[in-house]
Image 1 (cartoon, helix red, strand yellow):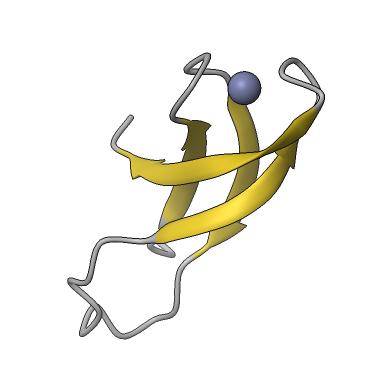
Image 2 (cartoon, rainbow, N blue to C red):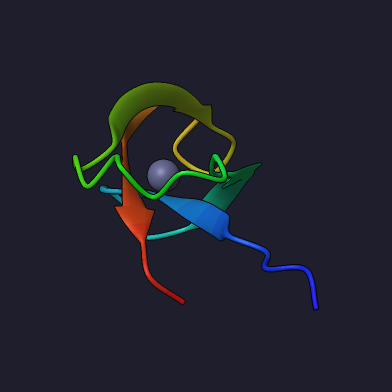
Length: 53
Ligand SMILES: [Zn+2]
């Protein structure tokens, strides 16, 4: 079974799940992901944080 590691980026303003990305095979990065991305709901760039599903 292939191990999938799909991460979700949630808008910190409206809590919308806007982005998904596949984390690397190595689980070395325990760093919290915080990126500024465009949120369609907020209609502006907001801080997106990694969410655990
Ligand atoms: Zn938003």
